View 1 (tube, rainbow, N blue to C red):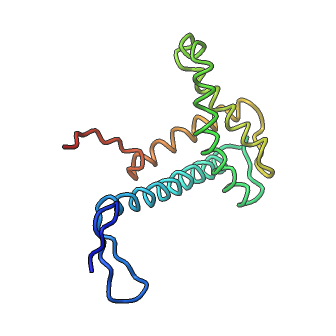
View 2: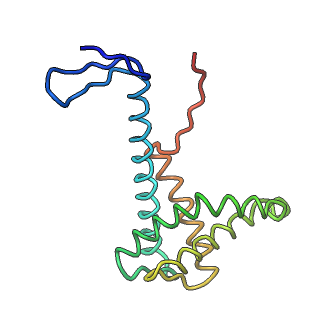
View 3: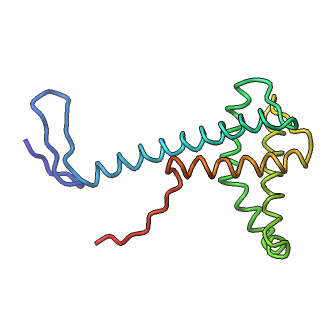
Length: 158
């Protein structure tokens, strides 16, 4: 049986309680929601992996528990999504004068802020945070590029 809905038509199967939606819009909404959630977990995993590798390579950073590593990866992603763009915008003149070098300082400050928020995550000082943030940024970029998570698609829809 076919029923008209705002999203197009849907097919009601013969089994009670089951409805199959045959609309392209509804399936696109579901796919976009799933893609966003998958993308979130990918970026969280890449952040956490980058912090773990940095912990293994640098002596100025330490995680006391696995839980603090995962929480730091999550918070670093949240801080980089919401706080960092605001700081980059506010310090734009300083970044232009220093030819972008100050953005590296902002990255270090974001890492130090996350270390301050997460118990069990220790960064020894500013310069340790600076070099760890630089390493985490580069490693995250490389891993995201390899798995295709940051792929930009430019196209024209007709």
